[in-house]
Image (tube, rainbow, N blue to C red; front, side):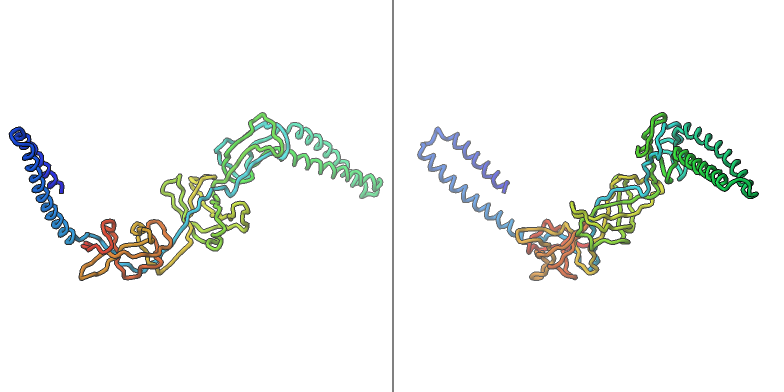
Length: 380
């Protein structure tokens, strides 16, 4: 069509130039009649050319076949998963504070250092306690001598029973007092309650520590909980022992399958969720407390499903449809079929109705076809 318009334009220009050359020689009335005749002739020629072009295009369209690739449907298994976000937390963690007050005289560990259960971390001032222990120990030594002598006399029926009991009571009382002082002394020596790593030391040597005041944080990195909050609608779906897939966005390539360790028994009234925990071994220490992870949970399975690539499903005002292959007048043609789609996962969608096993669908070239288009199937 563009070529025709170009020809028409050139003819018009030629006529205009020719007319301009002879305009001065001819009578204006004669010129008008001449131009009108030329216009009529040109319009007839244009109509004839347009008709021939239109017929050529029609013939070409009627013979056109759209090249496509197809796939024959068959029943297959289909599973759907949903993803929840969880947060890592330590199984064992200790925020250590002293049980008695005192000045910090020594800190034996550094942040990041591994410690064992029972290892001494720090020591508080014990000068007063040590003196008290020495005094009581001296008193106890004397009381022990007195008690032994009084016991020997009492066995020989020398002296009164009250003297014996007083000596015994003084001796035992000092023993108990010494044990109490030694227990207080031991409380001034701060030990690690767990195996782990010293994450943070809050107080410094020379500062005062008191009961309830946080001194150190020790965490065990060998095991972590991955905890997620799920909607209560998932209660019938997930239970203890179900295997879930775990990925960690901050650790590229990390994938792990683990069973559910625990499901919560209480629904949070504010957001209507319950807790799910997965116990993770962390021998390399690459997972960290408070790290976010994605938990992929299976909530639907169908062993005999019709499944199609999600990209093939289109929509119009009447609903979702897909193009399948039908036979019409001996030709393979595209047929628009309306479907009811079910769940989708990744790039696959289950078709609940509209298609059946054995149907042939168009998988490539589907954007170039329309309902009834003749197909050229090029599978290979």
